[in-house]
Amino acid sequence: MAQLNFPNGAVASTTTADISAIKIRKDFGKPGLIATTTLAIVVALGKKRSVIADAVAITSRLSGKLLRKLHFPPGVIASTTDSQVKFFLNVSPVAPPQGTLHRADLGSLLLGLNAPAFSGSRLVKGDLTPLSFKIQGQKLSGLTANFTAKRKDDPTATPIVKTGVTVHQTSPIVDPQTKIETMMGSFYIDPGDTASFPDSEVELSYTFKSNDGLGRVYTVVSGSFTVYSAG
Image (cartoon, rainbow, N blue to C red; front, side, top):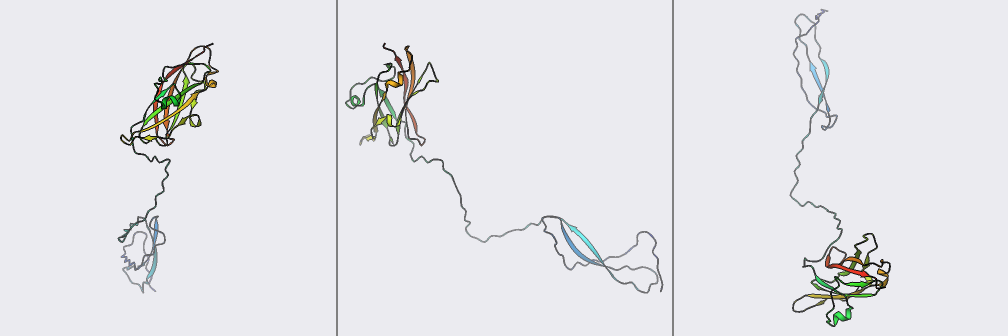
């Protein structure tokens, strides 16, 4: 049998590759592998008895991105939304109410007596002092009056606070012609509120407000008054 020896170096050859199937071994999102089988036939010059075809396995690497286009048929997409509401103010905007604070009991105010305004008053230390108020506006239902007074000479001192059960107020009365609502009430500065004050004159600043606890807060009246010792 004739034997043909090939020298070291490159050998000219013709290669034909016929890929009949591609098998994806890994998904396209990552570097994948494609398995192929190639049949290589080498033709050499010279005498030879025969050259047989040998199967050569070639492994190729494939990397890339798989793009898919999705087509949705006409229809309705349903969605669910969850929301958290901290509070809901069920009231339309109205003008802030107006009011007055008087140094008198509620009976005097209901009788229409000319009660002096509270701002600028001078109170005797340890006395019981009745105060009454009158508030007018719209949508007053649900509003509660509260009174706070603070000492100017000692901001850290406990303030005088009147709210809740210590304030007596009427239900709003609506004028059928003007649609204006009127709410009246009263409270007291008790002897214990000023008993610990020094014997010198003490000036206090105060605010009288109405609020409903849901966001509506109105400062109706503000001012100052003085407490002094009569002894």
